[in-house]
Length: 328
Image 1 (tube, helix red, strand yellow):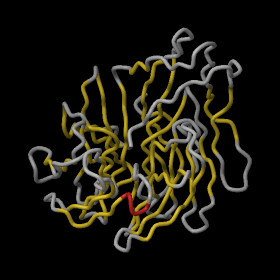
Image 2 (cartoon, rainbow, N blue to C red):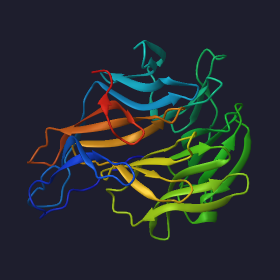
Image 3 (cartoon, one colour):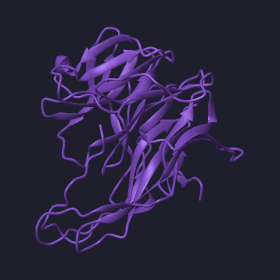
Image 4 (cartoon, rainbow, N blue to C red):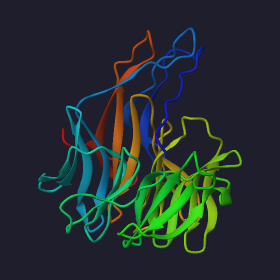
Protein backbone atom coordinates (compact mmCIF):
# COMPACT_ATOMS: atom_id res chain seq x y z
CA UNK A 1 0.00 0.00 0.00
CA UNK A 2 1.52 3.22 -1.11
CA UNK A 3 2.22 5.84 1.51
CA UNK A 4 -0.51 8.50 1.26
CA UNK A 5 -0.40 12.20 2.20
CA UNK A 6 -2.54 13.53 4.99
CA UNK A 7 -4.01 17.01 5.19
CA UNK A 8 -2.89 19.41 7.90
CA UNK A 9 -5.92 20.43 9.95
CA UNK A 10 -6.77 24.07 10.50
CA UNK A 11 -7.20 25.79 13.81
CA UNK A 12 -4.64 23.78 15.80
CA UNK A 13 -2.23 25.52 18.12
CA UNK A 14 1.08 26.69 16.74
CA UNK A 15 3.90 24.23 17.26
CA UNK A 16 4.00 20.94 19.14
CA UNK A 17 7.43 19.89 20.29
CA UNK A 18 8.32 16.59 21.84
CA UNK A 19 11.17 14.14 22.02
CA UNK A 20 11.61 10.91 20.09
CA UNK A 21 12.23 8.20 22.66
CA UNK A 22 13.14 4.57 23.12
CA UNK A 23 11.54 2.36 25.76
CA UNK A 24 12.34 -0.96 27.30
CA UNK A 25 9.74 -3.07 29.06
CA UNK A 26 8.97 -1.79 32.56
CA UNK A 27 11.30 1.20 32.18
CA UNK A 28 10.68 4.90 31.77
CA UNK A 29 11.28 6.50 28.40
CA UNK A 30 14.46 8.52 27.98
CA UNK A 31 15.11 11.42 25.57
CA UNK A 32 16.68 10.63 22.22
CA UNK A 33 16.54 12.65 18.99
CA UNK A 34 14.69 16.01 19.05
CA UNK A 35 11.41 15.75 17.15
CA UNK A 36 8.97 18.47 16.08
CA UNK A 37 5.62 18.82 14.33
CA UNK A 38 5.16 21.55 11.78
CA UNK A 39 2.85 24.44 12.73
CA UNK A 40 -0.73 24.51 11.52
CA UNK A 41 -1.77 26.97 8.84
CA UNK A 42 -4.61 29.41 9.38
CA UNK A 43 -7.18 29.43 6.62
CA UNK A 44 -8.35 26.62 4.30
CA UNK A 45 -7.17 23.11 5.13
CA UNK A 46 -4.23 22.54 2.78
CA UNK A 47 -1.04 20.57 2.37
CA UNK A 48 1.51 22.02 0.02
CA UNK A 49 4.05 20.30 -2.20
CA UNK A 50 6.51 17.84 -0.65
CA UNK A 51 9.91 18.40 -2.24
CA UNK A 52 12.21 15.37 -2.38
CA UNK A 53 15.96 15.92 -2.11
CA UNK A 54 17.91 14.60 -5.09
CA UNK A 55 20.23 12.40 -2.99
CA UNK A 56 18.56 9.89 -0.68
CA UNK A 57 18.95 6.41 0.82
CA UNK A 58 15.89 4.25 1.28
CA UNK A 59 14.33 0.87 2.09
CA UNK A 60 17.08 -1.16 3.82
CA UNK A 61 16.91 -4.94 4.13
CA UNK A 62 19.34 -7.12 6.09
CA UNK A 63 21.09 -10.12 4.55
CA UNK A 64 19.32 -13.05 6.30
CA UNK A 65 22.69 -14.83 6.59
CA UNK A 66 24.84 -11.89 7.74
CA UNK A 67 23.95 -9.30 10.38
CA UNK A 68 26.62 -6.93 9.04
CA UNK A 69 25.33 -6.76 5.46
CA UNK A 70 22.25 -5.18 3.93
CA UNK A 71 20.83 -3.86 0.69
CA UNK A 72 19.18 -0.49 0.14
CA UNK A 73 18.07 1.95 -2.55
CA UNK A 74 20.57 4.68 -3.29
CA UNK A 75 19.28 7.74 -5.13
CA UNK A 76 21.74 10.30 -6.47
CA UNK A 77 20.48 13.13 -8.67
CA UNK A 78 17.21 11.26 -9.05
CA UNK A 79 18.92 8.11 -10.43
CA UNK A 80 18.19 4.96 -8.40
CA UNK A 81 20.49 1.98 -7.76
CA UNK A 82 20.15 -1.15 -5.65
CA UNK A 83 23.27 -1.34 -3.47
CA UNK A 84 24.76 -3.94 -1.12
CA UNK A 85 26.57 -2.47 1.89
CA UNK A 86 28.73 -3.93 4.67
CA UNK A 87 28.54 -2.40 8.15
CA UNK A 88 32.02 -3.57 9.19
CA UNK A 89 34.07 -2.75 6.09
CA UNK A 90 31.89 0.07 4.66
CA UNK A 91 32.34 -1.66 1.29
CA UNK A 92 29.54 -1.10 -1.22
CA UNK A 93 28.57 -3.04 -4.35
CA UNK A 94 26.09 -1.75 -6.92
CA UNK A 95 23.82 -4.67 -7.86
CA UNK A 96 21.69 -2.91 -10.50
CA UNK A 97 21.47 0.68 -11.71
CA UNK A 98 18.80 2.86 -13.31
CA UNK A 99 15.94 0.98 -11.67
CA UNK A 100 12.61 2.21 -10.36
CA UNK A 101 11.98 0.01 -7.34
CA UNK A 102 8.86 0.81 -5.34
CA UNK A 103 8.86 -0.01 -1.64
CA UNK A 104 11.31 -2.36 0.07
CA UNK A 105 13.20 -5.20 -1.64
CA UNK A 106 13.50 -8.57 0.09
CA UNK A 107 16.51 -10.94 0.34
CA UNK A 108 16.54 -14.70 0.97
CA UNK A 109 19.16 -17.16 2.19
CA UNK A 110 19.90 -18.30 -1.38
CA UNK A 111 21.12 -14.77 -2.18
CA UNK A 112 18.12 -13.95 -4.34
CA UNK A 113 16.40 -10.56 -4.18
CA UNK A 114 12.83 -9.67 -5.12
CA UNK A 115 11.19 -6.30 -5.57
CA UNK A 116 8.26 -4.50 -7.16
CA UNK A 117 8.99 -1.84 -9.79
CA UNK A 118 7.04 1.24 -10.77
CA UNK A 119 5.10 -0.86 -13.29
CA UNK A 120 3.73 -2.70 -10.22
CA UNK A 121 5.12 -6.05 -11.31
CA UNK A 122 7.40 -8.42 -9.35
CA UNK A 123 11.04 -8.98 -10.35
CA UNK A 124 13.65 -11.52 -9.25
CA UNK A 125 17.40 -10.84 -9.13
CA UNK A 126 19.68 -13.80 -8.37
CA UNK A 127 23.23 -15.05 -8.85
CA UNK A 128 22.32 -16.98 -11.98
CA UNK A 129 20.67 -14.20 -13.99
CA UNK A 130 22.40 -11.44 -15.91
CA UNK A 131 19.47 -9.10 -15.37
CA UNK A 132 16.28 -8.96 -13.26
CA UNK A 133 13.63 -11.48 -14.28
CA UNK A 134 10.02 -10.31 -14.45
CA UNK A 135 7.75 -12.84 -12.75
CA UNK A 136 4.26 -11.29 -13.06
CA UNK A 137 2.30 -9.75 -15.93
CA UNK A 138 -1.14 -8.98 -14.53
CA UNK A 139 -2.95 -6.57 -12.19
CA UNK A 140 -1.04 -4.50 -9.60
CA UNK A 141 1.51 -6.53 -7.67
CA UNK A 142 3.28 -5.00 -4.69
CA UNK A 143 5.06 -5.74 -1.42
CA UNK A 144 6.72 -9.01 -2.51
CA UNK A 145 8.25 -11.18 0.23
CA UNK A 146 9.99 -14.53 0.21
CA UNK A 147 7.88 -17.25 1.80
CA UNK A 148 9.95 -20.04 3.38
CA UNK A 149 12.81 -18.94 1.10
CA UNK A 150 11.68 -20.86 -1.99
CA UNK A 151 8.36 -19.16 -2.81
CA UNK A 152 7.29 -15.56 -3.34
CA UNK A 153 4.25 -13.91 -1.79
CA UNK A 154 2.83 -10.53 -2.81
CA UNK A 155 -0.32 -8.42 -2.57
CA UNK A 156 -2.51 -7.98 -5.63
CA UNK A 157 -4.88 -5.16 -6.46
CA UNK A 158 -7.29 -4.63 -9.33
CA UNK A 159 -10.05 -2.14 -10.02
CA UNK A 160 -11.26 -3.90 -13.18
CA UNK A 161 -11.60 -7.51 -11.96
CA UNK A 162 -13.92 -8.06 -8.96
CA UNK A 163 -12.43 -10.38 -6.36
CA UNK A 164 -8.90 -10.21 -7.78
CA UNK A 165 -7.45 -8.36 -4.80
CA UNK A 166 -5.68 -10.49 -2.21
CA UNK A 167 -2.47 -12.43 -1.75
CA UNK A 168 -0.79 -14.55 -4.41
CA UNK A 169 2.03 -17.07 -4.06
CA UNK A 170 4.29 -18.01 -6.97
CA UNK A 171 7.53 -19.92 -7.56
CA UNK A 172 10.70 -18.53 -9.10
CA UNK A 173 9.31 -19.20 -12.58
CA UNK A 174 6.23 -17.12 -11.93
CA UNK A 175 3.86 -20.10 -11.70
CA UNK A 176 0.97 -19.60 -9.28
CA UNK A 177 1.12 -21.93 -6.28
CA UNK A 178 -1.61 -20.57 -4.02
CA UNK A 179 -3.76 -17.51 -3.38
CA UNK A 180 -6.35 -16.02 -1.08
CA UNK A 181 -8.90 -13.30 -1.68
CA UNK A 182 -9.10 -10.13 0.37
CA UNK A 183 -12.89 -10.41 0.18
CA UNK A 184 -12.75 -13.62 2.22
CA UNK A 185 -11.45 -11.64 5.19
CA UNK A 186 -13.22 -8.35 4.49
CA UNK A 187 -9.82 -6.71 4.52
CA UNK A 188 -7.20 -5.11 2.32
CA UNK A 189 -3.73 -6.64 2.48
CA UNK A 190 -0.80 -4.22 2.48
CA UNK A 191 2.74 -4.22 3.80
CA UNK A 192 3.81 -7.55 5.26
CA UNK A 193 6.61 -9.78 6.54
CA UNK A 194 6.92 -13.56 6.77
CA UNK A 195 8.30 -16.08 9.27
CA UNK A 196 7.93 -19.84 8.97
CA UNK A 197 4.41 -20.47 7.60
CA UNK A 198 3.02 -17.20 8.97
CA UNK A 199 2.46 -13.83 7.35
CA UNK A 200 2.32 -10.68 9.44
CA UNK A 201 1.01 -7.56 7.84
CA UNK A 202 -1.19 -4.50 7.52
CA UNK A 203 -4.96 -4.93 7.55
CA UNK A 204 -8.13 -2.86 7.54
CA UNK A 205 -11.40 -4.52 8.57
CA UNK A 206 -14.65 -3.53 10.30
CA UNK A 207 -13.39 -0.08 11.25
CA UNK A 208 -10.18 -1.44 12.75
CA UNK A 209 -6.69 -0.99 11.36
CA UNK A 210 -3.43 -2.60 12.40
CA UNK A 211 -1.42 -5.84 12.25
CA UNK A 212 -2.76 -9.30 11.46
CA UNK A 213 -1.22 -12.76 11.28
CA UNK A 214 -2.20 -15.30 8.63
CA UNK A 215 -1.21 -18.94 8.43
CA UNK A 216 -1.08 -19.15 4.66
CA UNK A 217 -1.37 -22.95 4.24
CA UNK A 218 -4.52 -23.11 6.43
CA UNK A 219 -5.71 -19.52 5.77
CA UNK A 220 -6.36 -19.07 9.49
CA UNK A 221 -6.14 -15.36 10.37
CA UNK A 222 -6.02 -13.43 13.64
CA UNK A 223 -5.60 -9.79 14.66
CA UNK A 224 -2.41 -9.00 16.59
CA UNK A 225 -3.26 -5.34 17.18
CA UNK A 226 -6.03 -3.07 15.92
CA UNK A 227 -7.14 0.54 16.42
CA UNK A 228 -9.19 3.24 14.71
CA UNK A 229 -7.48 4.50 11.55
CA UNK A 230 -6.69 8.21 11.69
CA UNK A 231 -4.12 8.68 8.91
CA UNK A 232 -1.26 9.40 11.29
CA UNK A 233 -1.13 5.72 12.21
CA UNK A 234 -0.93 4.43 8.62
CA UNK A 235 1.55 1.56 8.62
CA UNK A 236 4.75 2.27 6.70
CA UNK A 237 6.83 -0.79 7.55
CA UNK A 238 6.38 -4.32 8.94
CA UNK A 239 9.12 -6.73 9.95
CA UNK A 240 9.31 -9.94 11.98
CA UNK A 241 12.29 -10.72 14.19
CA UNK A 242 12.77 -14.25 12.90
CA UNK A 243 14.91 -15.20 15.87
CA UNK A 244 12.63 -13.99 18.66
CA UNK A 245 9.38 -13.96 16.62
CA UNK A 246 8.33 -10.47 17.75
CA UNK A 247 6.72 -8.12 15.25
CA UNK A 248 7.95 -4.59 14.56
CA UNK A 249 6.04 -1.98 12.63
CA UNK A 250 6.28 1.74 11.88
CA UNK A 251 3.63 4.33 11.12
CA UNK A 252 3.35 7.59 9.21
CA UNK A 253 3.60 9.85 12.26
CA UNK A 254 3.11 7.89 15.52
CA UNK A 255 6.37 5.90 15.71
CA UNK A 256 7.82 2.39 15.78
CA UNK A 257 6.18 -0.37 17.82
CA UNK A 258 6.94 -3.91 18.95
CA UNK A 259 4.23 -6.56 19.36
CA UNK A 260 4.99 -9.61 21.46
CA UNK A 261 4.07 -12.60 19.30
CA UNK A 262 2.79 -14.64 22.26
CA UNK A 263 0.93 -12.13 24.44
CA UNK A 264 0.15 -9.59 21.66
CA UNK A 265 1.23 -6.83 24.07
CA UNK A 266 2.47 -3.72 22.30
CA UNK A 267 5.11 -1.16 23.31
CA UNK A 268 6.37 1.90 21.50
CA UNK A 269 10.13 1.95 20.97
CA UNK A 270 10.39 5.16 18.87
CA UNK A 271 8.22 8.25 18.52
CA UNK A 272 7.71 10.03 15.21
CA UNK A 273 6.71 13.48 14.03
CA UNK A 274 6.91 15.74 10.99
CA UNK A 275 10.68 16.19 11.27
CA UNK A 276 11.51 12.50 11.94
CA UNK A 277 9.40 9.53 10.88
CA UNK A 278 10.22 5.91 10.03
CA UNK A 279 9.39 3.29 7.40
CA UNK A 280 10.73 0.09 5.80
CA UNK A 281 12.06 -1.75 8.87
CA UNK A 282 14.47 -4.71 8.87
CA UNK A 283 15.65 -6.80 11.84
CA UNK A 284 19.13 -8.34 11.78
CA UNK A 285 19.19 -12.17 11.64
CA UNK A 286 20.82 -12.29 15.10
CA UNK A 287 17.88 -10.30 16.50
CA UNK A 288 19.98 -7.50 18.01
CA UNK A 289 19.62 -4.54 15.62
CA UNK A 290 16.99 -2.73 13.61
CA UNK A 291 17.49 -0.91 10.30
CA UNK A 292 14.97 1.68 9.13
CA UNK A 293 14.47 4.38 6.56
CA UNK A 294 14.11 7.62 8.50
CA UNK A 295 12.37 10.46 6.69
CA UNK A 296 13.53 13.89 7.86
CA UNK A 297 11.22 16.81 7.13
CA UNK A 298 12.67 20.34 6.90
CA UNK A 299 12.03 23.77 5.40
CA UNK A 300 8.35 23.99 6.26
CA UNK A 301 6.60 26.59 4.09
CA UNK A 302 4.15 28.61 6.18
CA UNK A 303 2.44 29.97 3.07
CA UNK A 304 1.47 26.73 1.32
CA UNK A 305 2.02 24.02 3.94
CA UNK A 306 4.76 22.25 1.97
CA UNK A 307 8.11 20.94 3.16
CA UNK A 308 11.30 19.17 2.05
CA UNK A 309 11.92 15.46 2.70
CA UNK A 310 15.16 13.50 2.85
CA UNK A 311 15.31 9.74 3.47
CA UNK A 312 18.26 8.34 5.42
CA UNK A 313 19.22 4.86 6.64
CA UNK A 314 19.42 4.57 10.43
CA UNK A 315 20.46 1.66 12.62
CA UNK A 316 19.57 1.14 16.28
CA UNK A 317 19.47 -1.48 18.96
CA UNK A 318 16.48 -3.79 18.84
CA UNK A 319 14.84 -1.81 21.69
CA UNK A 320 15.12 1.44 19.71
CA UNK A 321 18.08 2.85 21.64
CA UNK A 322 21.36 4.22 20.28
CA UNK A 323 20.00 5.27 16.90
CA UNK A 324 22.61 6.56 14.42
CA UNK A 325 22.52 7.64 10.80
CA UNK A 326 24.59 5.60 8.37
CA UNK A 327 26.60 7.17 5.53
CA UNK A 328 27.18 10.46 7.36
